[in-house]
Structure formats: C-alpha cells, structure tokens
Image: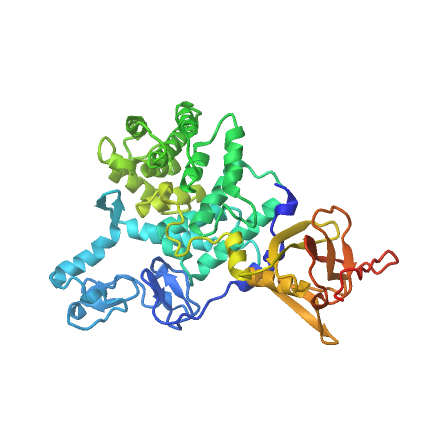
Length: 533
C-alpha cells in the first residue's frame, strides 16, 4: 500500500482530544444505564464490576452481594428488600422488581440469583454457576488494559482483539454515546494509520484482525480513507500458497463473495495437521466453512462440516479441556454450530474448565476466546449488523455534502505533511466554477469534521493557521501553505501567498494544503496566474 493513499496523521492529535462524554438527553436505550450525573450511558455489564466507568462513580454504588431477603435488580445496580417485589411500585431503576409478577416472590428471588448464571448456547440455555461473575471479571480485565494516563496508545497493540471480545460480550459498547466504544474506534483508526503510513508490511493475519475489529466498531473496512482493506485481504489470499482459515472467516464475515476455491482452502487447512496448532486450525476452519455454508451463491456439503465438528469432539480430555484454555474456548465456539456440543461432548465440564482458568491471571488470547463463549457467542457473530446506520462511503459523504447542481468542474484537494511528504490525504471534488479555494477547504471540513481549519484574518482575508489541531509552529518554522498544480502533473507545486478566498478554481486543479518548513529563501516562487481577476 502506498503512503500517498494513507489518511493524514492529523487524526492522531484529533482523535483523543475528541473523545469526551456527551451529555445524554432523555433515557438511555435498552442495554445501557445512565450515570447519576447523566453525563453518559454505560453498558449494564460494567455495573458493579469494581471499575468506575461513570465519572461520578455511580456505577459502583450499592454493589456487593444481596442478602437472602433481598432481590437484585436486573441491571445489578441495587438490592431491594423482598417486600418491594411486585408491590405495584418500581423500586429498581430498571423496574425489574415489577416484572413477571405472576411468579411467587420466593421463586422470583431464587430466579434472580440463579438466572444471572444462564448462558445461551445456540438454541439451548444452560445454567453454569459462576458464569456471571466470570463474564464481569473478564470484561473488567479487558477494560483495565486501558492506560488511563496515556494520551496515545491507550489500549495497546492487541486493540483489535479487545474490540471484538467486548463487542461479543455486549454489542452496545459501540452504540452511539458510549465513550469507551468511541475511544476504541478512534484508536483503531490511529493504529491502522500508523501501520499503513510507514509503509510497513502488515501481515495478512494482522490485516484480518483489524477488519474484524472495524466491523464491530461500525467502521467500513471497504473504505478506510480510500483504501479497500477487504479487497487487499482478498488479493493476498489469492496470491498465497497456504491460507490461514481465519482469513477466509474474516472475508466471509465482511460480506466478500466466497468461492468454491475458498471452500477448498478451508478443507485443506483442516486436513493439514500442523501441530501444535492443529486443533485450533480445525476449529477456525469449521467456523469459516459454517459461514460460507450460509452464502446463497455457494453449495456446500453439510456432511463435511458435521464430520469436521465430530472430529473436534474427539480432542476433549476427561477433565473437559481440549488441549488448553484457548483451544477449549475456540472448540466450544465451533461446536455452537448446529448445537453440536449436545452430543458426544461434555459441554458443562468444558465451561467449568474455562471458568477455573479465568479465575486468576489470564493471557489475552485466552480471554479473547473465552469471553464470547461465556456470552454464547463465537467469531461467527462478528458483523456490522448491529450498527444503526450503514457505514457511509466517502463517495456518499461527498455527494451529500456537496449537493452540486448545474455546471461543475473537477478539482482535487490534498493535505500533505512534512517537507518530504511523509503522509498525504486526497479528496476528489466537483465544485461550482465560481467557487474559491476557500470553499474547497470548507467543503472538505464539512465532509470530515476532523479536518477543521482555523484562520487568521489579515486585512479582512482568511489565512490558514491550523488544521485538525495542528497549528503553525513559528519556533520550529513549520507553517501551513497553499500550493497549486495540475492534477496530471508530477512536477513541483507552486507556492501561493494569497488568501484562499482570493483564489478562484480552475478545472483539473490540485489544491494542496501543505504543512512544511517555511521556504524563506531566494528560491521562493509565488504564482499569480491563478489569482482572481
């Protein structure tokens, strides 16, 4: 991937300054709880998890075990006396004490304490004591990975896995207004920019992990600032002699067109027997084939998949494990297909072994595979279907922002950083012929509010002094300059000293906003040919 295609590093300074709680209006939607100060809505799973997620700490108030004469509210925020259950008055903030009131109070109390350990596995619900506390513990463990004192790299290099695990535990983390989800989305963007801007050779597996994370974070992997990451992964898959089945699963979850060759790749990976990762690969192959079996353009043999799943069951030991915690959790994810765990597999022993393994210090990969299982999910559930609005492509955003009617001209607007153009970002626009360069700059800011521009007004004319929080730096001698050249030209662009409001557009013009050291020397070239008459 060429550096010129990569989004500007401007996002680095913008993203984390942009992450802040938004004042919530009205009630939080289902699955979220409003903090007492109403500053934000948080996931119900974050209530009473020993981490203060609300600024006022209200999510950790009133926590602790409910007594035998108390009823725990469904959102786990309060314990109320059993006399308050079904008395016609809502004592729980979520009103759960007044639901299902046809059941006797003692049964309600017992069910409120036991149902929290229910886990839905496919079409069945199992009650596994300790599941609820293990879920909360793992969610808290993932959240504690965040570096509170850091301004960048808050979540670490495994952020893509953190995003997927937290989503599969509860998809509302990436709902509008959830500041944790917003922060993760911003940092995912920054990490990808870092990987791509330095032209590093990101492995196909790493690329696949980021695509999965983008799906759950409601980011469009087909239009990451002009880059189609799904297409890039497909290209690498076609060029490779051996394909990790995880890549096929990601392509399938991303909605890419699957082929019989992909089926062959997956079955070949399943049969490859590459120890010591054989069972892990078989589980991933089963998940990938299960995803492909749902595609209308493919006809797959269901018997092959069922044989794969049956083979996986043979790896279970008497204590319930399959090799180790990571593999056990991954195999259980695969056996959720067709409820295959229900025969010839001790699912309760497997779940108990997972619970025991996550009770202490747990490696990230183990937590990444285990948490979805404890919520009845698998990597097959990774998608963007939970996103309220389909991710908007840049072309759609441009069309909406410009809404240009009548005669237009095509221009190109670029942002360059550094004297050697370390990073660049380009937009292609259709504008009215009588527009100025100032109009182009403001249009791009309208399309992407991270490209907000600030000006100094000199003699009534605006001059760019800041873009996306990156300001003119007189001590270092680095400033924003406007340059022009023809779109088809690879030559040196011409430096302009006029205000953008005085520079009228011409067809096939490239407007460059360049952050670079000031050229205070004799070779300074000032163009007047593009000034307005």
